Structure formats: structure tokens, C-alpha cells
Image (cartoon, rainbow, N blue to C red; front, top):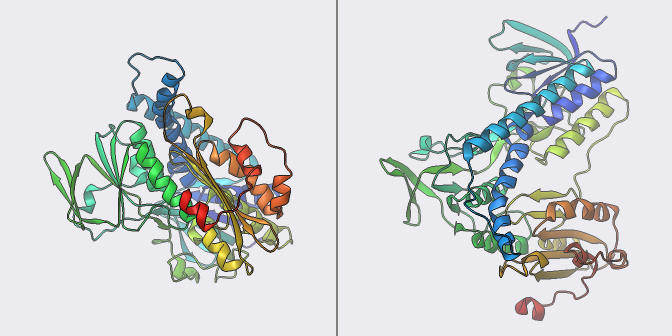
Length: 461
């Protein structure tokens, strides 16, 4: 008989923690998971899912504009923010309930409360007068938004978490940041008719993405009504009777109703008791783990955003599966972070997989071949819109493997999922070219690109 209350205790009921708990319980182990907020974690409750609902709601205004070009006419079409919020919250509650029910069906005990480590085998449920012991512990507490707490007036600003529950839609908003979350919410609010300004301290948005993608998207979101101010950040925020005055370091002042900071997320490790359990952090403040997600404590593992390896929900789930296989199936596995596709649900959206051109030039010893096309999609032919799609293939010049695919335009997240299979499989440009096109589609451009990018056509394009 075990000397512990549970074989596995999971801290955090997000996508990664839930998957690990369920798999382990279904394998016959006694498992519990603690969650201090709602089951489902960042993705389901305050991240990917509600954000995607907001994106879809905001895209309707653009769809109506396109529809008029095709002969449709509409009366007084209007958007009602409270109606949307209610429908969104009902659906999120339903999804959270499904996650909780699936835990129960698998035999996992759900503990409602904040779990804090007391030592390597013991957790305390804060405020519940309950102490629990476990043979093994898995930390999957995710991340939380970061904002500069020393900025004068920062108490007047919100983060993405509050943006999901604004009591009313603002007339004007300023969003600080240039990553996924910032550009996605800029598109959301602009699409809902809010006067939207995006400021970012760097030279262009989406740091870490391919430079062509960054430049193209910055231009396209401005066409959708987002004012982009680069190389700039806040000096202070002043609350007045008329709204919030944003004092920027370049001397500009902007008055808005809401200021939202989307300046990054940090691992959620505060007051978790890591030191008492012998769990160390790395230099960036994330839990230090080996390739198999094991921490510096022999019986404690960590997965997902709290480790700050690749902060994507599907990756956390795959890390959970690898943890279970390694620890409970005697089949050591670690997730392969190479060629993981990702999407930015900006407007227009972005889909990428593999290496940027700059990364490929550093890693491909004999150089790279680059294929780029920019074109107006067929959908916009009737509307007079000058919005354009970007598609880019990065190819290892030696092996001719396609090592990077970058798309900006309608349906790019759907396209990149399938392109990722080819990149992960190591298919060559010739194999892409041998694939018959589906016509008329945007995706056919991916298998019909023939002209390599040269200095001459780069200048022309």
C-alpha cells in the first residue's frame, strides 16, 4: 500500500495538466488535480478559445463590406457587446464543464483551491485546512500576463484577461505590445468599430517571425483601421474626466477610454512553494526542466507555459503525453519542438511553420532558395480592396527540403496545418511542385511557385 495519498498530484487544470491527469488515472493510478480558478486553464477560460470567438465576431464587419461588393445590401446592421459576452460566457462555461466531467469519468479527483508546495511530496490547499501527499507531483500552472508595474498610472490599464469581460465596448483603445496577443486584440477591437491604436517599442510587430511576414502584416492591419506606432512606448498614463491620456516617450499624447497591455506573459510560479520542494527556476524565471520535463526535484515534473519552452496549447498537451509515457509507461519520450506550426489570429491571419529566412540562412550551410508571392485574393476582386496575401517558401539550397512556410491572408491557419505535415516530413521543393494544384484556390500558390527570389525581383516586389 502506498505511503502517499495519491500516486500523482497535478497542480493546474489547464490543457496540459488535465491531459496528464486523465491519462495517468486511466492507467490505474490514484490521481488528483488542483485548480484555483476554473477547469480549462488559460486556453479555454481566458485565452485561445474566447479570443477566437471574439475574432470571429469582429470579422463580421469585414465580411459585410465584402458582401456589398457582391451585390448584397444590409439595413442597420449593428453589434451588441452584452449579447456577445453572454453567449461567449455560456459557451466557455459549457467547455469548462466538459473538462471537469472528463476528469471525473477518468477517476481523477478535482480539488478546488490553490495548491502550494510544502516539500517535495506535500501540498497544502490554501484556505481549505487540507494537506495532501503524493508520490509524484506535476506542475502545470501556465502563465499570466505581465505589465510594467513601475509605470506611472499602470493601475488604470488592463491586460488580455480583463479584455474578455469589459462591461461595455470602448470608443477608443490603445494596445501596448507587438506580439500575438497585441495584434490579435487590435484586429478584434478595430473590427468591432473601436478606434484602435497599437504601440510597440520595437522596429516592427511580431518579433521572431519572418521579416517579410512582419512587414506585410503591419501594412495589412493598418488597412483594416489599426493605427500602428512603432519604436515607442509609454512614459505614463493619466486618468482624466475625459478618459485616459497616454503620454508616450516620443512626445505624443493619445487620449483613449481603455489602455490594454499585451507586453508578454510570465510563468505562474509566484508563491507556489517551489524553493521548499527543491524546484529551481531558470534565468528567465521559468521552472527549470530537462528534456523529459523533470525538474530539479526527483519526483516533480513541469509542463506547459510554466516552463516557457514553447507556449502553445497543443505543445502542452503533447508534453503531457510524453510525461505520462516516460513516467508511467516505461517509454521515455520527449516532445520534438522542431517544425511546430502556429497561427496568429490577426486580421488578416498568419500561419507559419519551420524556419524564417534569417534562421535558414544561418543554419543551411550552402544557402537557401526563397520563393515569395504577393497577390490580391480572388474574394476581393469585386470589392476594390487592395488587401494582399503573402506566401513564402524557404528552401535549403543543398537538400532542396522546404524548411519554412509563411502565409499571411485569409484561411492561412487552416492552410498551415496541412503544410506542416509536408515540412515535418522533410519533403523537397520538387515534391511540392509535383503536387497538382486545386483551382481556383489561394493554397494552389504553394505548389505553383517557380521563380526564386533574387535581388532584382525583390526590388520589383
